[in-house]
Length: 316
Image 1 (cartoon, one colour):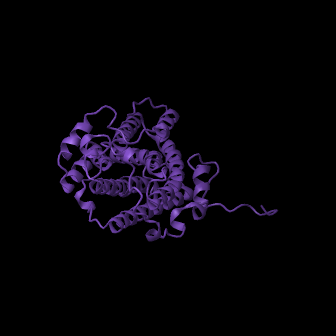
Image 2 (tube, rainbow, N blue to C red):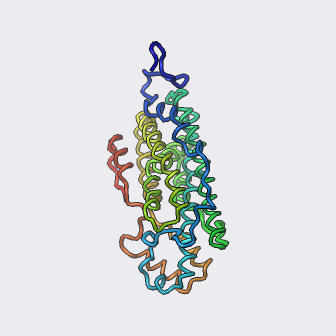
């Protein structure tokens, strides 16, 4: 720092206000250096490699099932490509229907916490990030279709599991305030836990370079978003009454169960689209196999938040 010159800060920051997290302020100030949206776009066409897997077999819930093992190599390629399309749809739908609505509540200070400009800037930056992440995953799916010469229309897949769970939870809320609390709980879980979801793709030299690069860039942002969501959830939770706190905790636990689970509805739709002989029977077999219900296994982020909040809640 130059002598006598204070470091730049965001307008409106109040160092005495506990709602103004130093973490949030620092992330907002660093946005131009760390955000994927501020970087050059990937040269997607140059990264596609037809010899690589679009999705790892280790993550297919039915990878060891006799029906899958008996498929032709071409059929297995199609199912892996579908798995990547479904993975991207899951990310995009959660960004659109879970994350940004939750961030919007914080952007307008819907819980009357007294958030200042630094929080509003950080949250709006995160919302821009999420829109760009949606575009990144849309482009990645489009490249897979072109690279494989396959149609694989996303519209054949059902609404993703986390979005369905959130809609049901909101429908059971008695008023707008309760819906806001539940919406915040779902957003918080998604932002704190999405890195664990993205991590399932990053590792593995056998995976498409463009898929790994897309996820790696996305994950860089989400590690920052997790800090933002965590800090602001704590601020909001501390201002809630006992009933709202219970609703937040219940909503977060339900969100984690939905977020972490394998979406067998999507797989059933894919089996129908591909007309896989015995495909739906295979999915039914897997649904009832011990340990097959979870895709995400890392709940450490939410457990840490619950510990901070003093919440004792069972997670999957």
